[in-house]
Length: 62
Image (cartoon, rainbow, N blue to C red; front, side):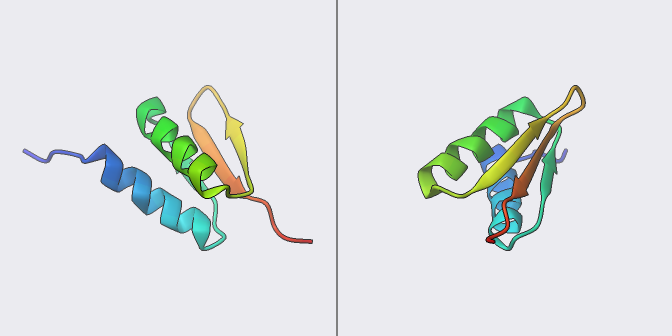
């Protein structure tokens, strides 16, 4: 049986965001972990919540 570690999945998505790429998450629980870390790290990220999931899109520096 494969057990998913929510914190590890959230950290992997967060690393993707830090590198400047968008990340998508279907699970509201994991999306909440990502949102919490974005606030703690004060990252400039646009969040698009849809009926299917959550997109986290880093804002590019102008």
